[in-house]
Amino acid sequence: MGVGGIAVFPADTVYGLACDAQNRVAVERLYRLKARPMDKPSAVMFFDLELALATLGELGPRTTEALERLLPGALTVLLRNPEARFALACGADPGTLGLRVPIVPALAGVNWPVLQSSANRAGGPDARRLDEVPASIRRVADLVLDGGELPGTPSTVVDLRDYERDNAWTIARHGVVGETAVAAALEWQFHFDPSTYLAMIREDIPVYDRFQDELTHASGTGARRMLELGTGTGETALRLLTRHPGAELVGIDENDAMLAVARTRLPSDRVQLRVSRLQHALPDGQFDLVASALCVHHLRGPEKRDLFMRIRGALAPGGRFVLADVVRPADPGDAVTSLTPGFDHPSPLDDQLQWLTEAGFQARVTWRQADLAVVVATVSGPPLAFRS
Image 1 (tube, one colour):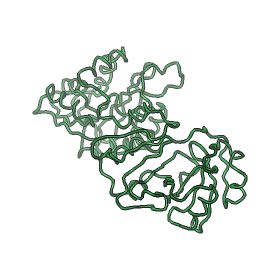
Image 2: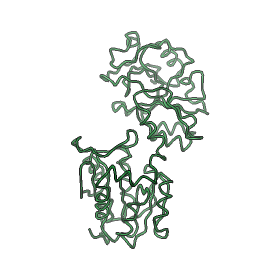
Image 3: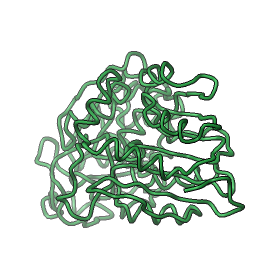
Image 4: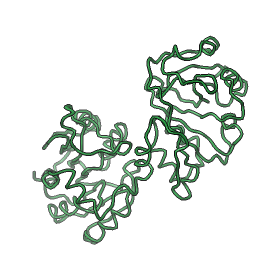
């Protein structure tokens, strides 16, 4: 890329062409290879979401959160581009930028953006296999990477240009990611209706009350300062406050409507509730107990691993973390809890136990049924006044 080369590479959808997004000579050469008019836009592809967000620093908080939910993945996102960044990729509309952050593990170390387009002649079929890339393109490309057979369906294009202002979004091109999954990611704040949430959960999880009892029992007794992740309408918080009558609780959730219900149910002199995401900084510790029910599975694997590290930092010596959640079972027949693509990302229990160990916890499973599990993770240090 640094010397103006063009690469044929496997994305997470179809084979693509890539070049330095800021090199006019390389971009014009890529367009000629495709016989594509220069006024037609391409996308800028990053292989790291954090780098993309840092580069596009003018994005508003609502759009940034949307990107964190959608990406990485098989999506192209249309964004407002007031700084006219990557103008060579924007075609005739420098005020709009197409962004891609694919999931390609073999290219995860690439730390600069590229201009990318599908590896075909303009209007031609997308290439699922390398031998489907036109020979005229493969002969001229400076680097050709064979990633085997790909899904073969192009990315879904989502228009977020008005999302910051009024939550508006549209599907500009249907592709591999379905509209339901996009809606689940973008309309997360409306995903649950507080008035029907508990009935919905009990219908979906017949052992819900047993599940909550197991979490509460695993929390021990005697905690004085507690942090709950994903407070919702306050079901778990009520149980924890009863189990630990001398404790105060800080609860976070990203759905303000759910927290509004919780505020009417929980004692205000013992509870502080905050709108916040699990990906954001946790409230200041030190906490004796951190607990979460049916919340952490909304995070992808690396996000869970990062969260466990931050929970470890928020706990006092001798404290404990109780995780009660949906896991990905080894036997597909045990996957009985309803999940929403794009919104729910359960991880294998063994992976989560490993991430907890890496974070400095001693973790053990205290209860499990089908795809539900309760895990207690403790921090070494002088024991607190906990009793199991």
